[in-house]
Image (tube, rainbow, N blue to C red; front, side, top):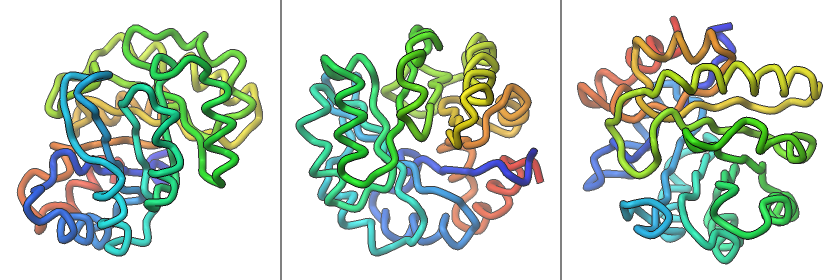
Length: 220
């Protein structure tokens, strides 16, 4: 299973003074996706970046840009992030009035559509979305800040969603974000995750350590 696990470093933990170089460094170190956390200070208690930064980073990597939108209302900004170069747009059911319509909009833009479940959001939320989405993101911390500890109750949710995905027969990625490190990564993988978002664990030690960090997170 480990060989098929994709690692999506969260640039939230990168050196923001040299973001383009950091993205190039994780690309060269073997990451699979570049995970970009977008926060608005309203939906979550933190503010990060907008479409202009995504656009500025796009030339620095050929890897898929995995953009997690922690903003509300989210629908207003989907076109801007798609135009900026996002490949995957992942949204919270709570961030707009009609999650199914939001997913349809993302697909109409030619992008992969993901749905995020916060720690308190049940797997059942996916019952009538599973046939339309490309990715499920399970938050194993409450969204807003990097460096938080993994919430172990989310392992049961990952297991439940893995069963839903397998039953659907569709090619849906199961991503986990929050407190992923060398100890929790194997737990998330064992529960059924196949994409791991890791900020602190990827970027610690500086660029010379990134390749080894990514390899260890993957289970290599």
